[in-house]
Length: 432
Image (tube, rainbow, N blue to C red; front, side, top):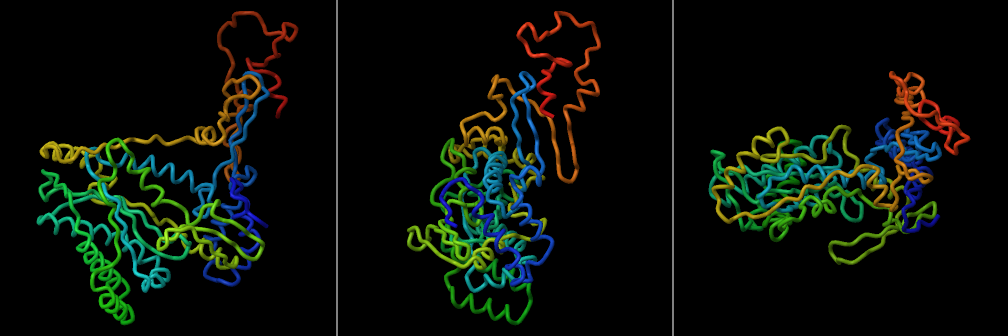
């Protein structure tokens, strides 16, 4: 089977349909209800009979009809990943402090620790996110020479561009912080890269050593310090992010919340092997890799995190619980800094499913194709909850019943107008 680079979602699903059972037999680690549910949801996404649906009908002419399947929200689903990215951009754009300069910072885990992180994901991944924030606060304080409380939106990535396991952090971090009294905002124009490398190495290896507490880990930590005397690989985006009136959230979304692979990167599937492409960090060129289906499925499912785990977390002055209070403090503190920070944040509205459909197809799905009237909700059904709403039942219960004397002529078919019942066209009921 050859996958054309189109919007067809079936190729990725077909790989799991053909080989998921065999993969589970070969890898008992994935023989759990949690993984079965993730795969089942992904395979059922877009199928109204399995996921549920909202049905729209035209209440004006009774002819228009549109069915919207409920999404699966599975972390394996490439279809839901695009919606997740859009929603994340909208959410984050409302969680940034106007006037504060942000930087995109990447903190990596050395290759010698990747297997350790994979085998101990439950206890290490949360610690990884926390120590990234501790590293940044320590780093900012050392650079300024006083204790600063910065803020970070931290996103955990577990995959590299080729899909292999590569845990690292993306931070949307303030380029500065509040002083210890919370009265003044200290902006840092220059961030010394070499210091950040050493700080990150110390915080990461201390966290690993204290979390796992074994002789083997102690030896691995000592080896890492010896192998990387100048610290670990980090990356600081050059310059201020965003520039005036640009959205930092949309800028960083392509780096931060993307799935392990997108459908357009799958070039071929022949039933036994999968060929896909990616842009290499080292060569900066598009490279192709062909792997057997067992390896491909493994590269996809290894990036699912424990149930309930939050990949995106807010710390410091970005913490959601204290955001409103801190926002006032920052505004007052910035007022004392003349002409230093002039950045602006653009709020991005979250798109509805209707708007996404219209952007994709150029057609409003809820406008009746026959009379161009806006259609209304007719029925909502869920495979577990059953019928949640039924317009026909609402009509029978008197939703449109008039409690006063009705004025005007009765609508008659011989006058060229559709016959009605309770003000709605009879053809609407014939669609039942």
